[in-house]
Image (cartoon, rainbow, N blue to C red):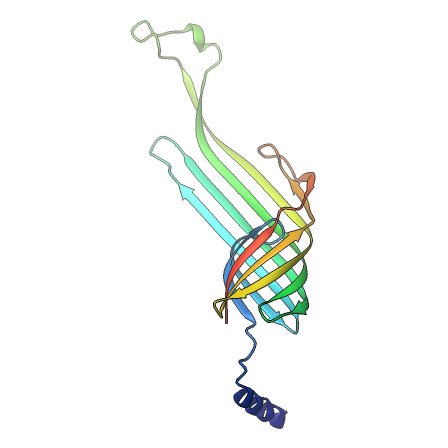
Length: 193
C-alpha cells in the first residue's frame, strides 16, 4: 500500500498529472435535482448530489399577517458512463421536492351585516379577521441522462434530461397526487476541487 502511494506520487510528478477533482459545490435547479445550494461527490465513476434551499419571509404588521416560506431540496445518484477530456456523460436517478406555505390575513363581511350600515359612515360594515394558511407541495422523481462540461479548469456545468414523474397539489392544502410526466431539463453550475 505504501509503495503504491509512492509510485503514484512519482507518476504524478513525472507526468505532471493532477489528482482528479471529486468534490463539487454550486447551485442546481430541476425537477429531479431539486432546487438550491448543492454538494456533489464522485468516487469511482459513481456519485451523489444533495441540494437544499430554505427560504422564509415575514412581512407581518401589528394588525395583519403575511408569511411566505419555500423549502426545496433533492437527492440524485450518478453513474458516469464515459469520461472525456472536457467532460463526462452520465446517467442518474433522483428526486426533488418543494413545499410552499403562505400565511396571510383576510377580512370578510360578517353575514347579515350588509344591511346594518352605519348612518354616520355608509361604507363601514362589520368584518371578521381570519388568518389563512395555504400549503402547496410537489415531488418529482425519475431517471435522466446528461452531460457535464468542464471549463476554466475548476468550473463545471451539468445538464440532464429526465423523465420526471411529478406528484403535486394543484389547489391549496390538497394532498399529493400524480399530475404528469415531464422532460424538463436539470441544470447545475459547480466549482470543482
